[in-house]
Amino acid sequence: MKDGALKGLKVLEFGEFISAPYCGKLLADLGAEVIKLEKPGLGDSARSWGPFPDNIPHLEKSGLFLFLNTNKLGITLDVHLKTGKDVFYRLVEWADVLIESYPPSEIEKLGLDYANLSRLNPSLVMTSISPFGQTGPYRDYRGSDLISSHMSGEAFGNPAEGVDNLERYSPLKGPMHAADFMTGLTAAVSTMPEVLFLQTNGIGRHIDISAQEALASVSRQELAFCMCEGLCPTRELGRKRRGGILYPCKDGFVCLWIGPHWDKMVEMMEKPDWTQLEMFQTPMARAEHVEEFDRLVSLWTMEYTSEEIDKSAIVHGVPCSPVRSVKYVVADNQLAYRDYFVEIDHPVAGVQKYPGAPYKLSATPWQIRRPAPLLGEHNTEVYCQMLGCSPADLVQMRQAEVI
Image: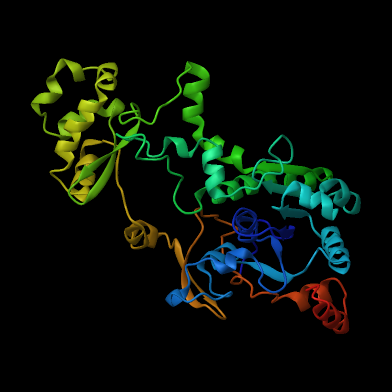
């Protein structure tokens, strides 16, 4: 087994559910030594989320938890107890990076804020993830995937094509936990420059991640129109006048980017009479009559299947994608060729198929070194072998519900 690109990087993960664990996973899958800290008893709240094999809830079989926590060591610790806090301080002294995702006021109340922890470990890189960041009037507000999606403005523009009844159709957040994953990805990307700075200068830093800002950053086109042109997009049908748009077909939908490819699109549709009308001869004219334009394109797409349109688009050079369900993604030939999905054998959940890495590294390939940890699986390894506790100490901590 080859060493990962981040071999030697020591990471303490003190956060739960998705954002912080996803940040930790991205580092762990690249070879970092990540110790995941969970609450004694029930552990990370992601353990109670599905999907579960055979739809039977089980702390060790959550598909969400299993995916998010590959390649990590798992321990339990209650930092609200004095003994637990003392142990946490020792782990901070060990770590190069601390990832945490608790409310700023709670972290400060526990004495686990960067000001205190950096005294213990001046070279500590601490990545703090919260709904609205460490400062500002919203710093202590609770948040969620749903709240981040709407407070960032990201959900306002979904569906992108707009709706024909503003009162009936509400703005939609992205599917599942997209906002939480984007926040975790932002945290991981933001952590790496500070790790490089640490390795060069030996000085730690504090990274302040706001989920609201992480999501607002992916609404950049909408923000650009508002800030640069003074245009505040509406949610009315036909709002999208540039880029790709969804069109119905016989078996679902296709996304076609017609804009600068108008002449190729006309050829692909075999030059219907309506394409010669003056109202469709320039990009500006097509944008002005976008409702009628989209209606006429839809009449053409509905005559074909998504596969037929996709094949024709490839021939004519029109950017196109069928709108696929997860069922088709799992069976995709391209993903299979690149070995994107991998099977991992977990001691309780058994062999399951997981999404792999969206990248290929030539010298330090992505690999699964261990499945997601059982609750408290590595308590003995971390507390006894790494921190020097005795077996008797471990028993006492269990009895006191510290671990």
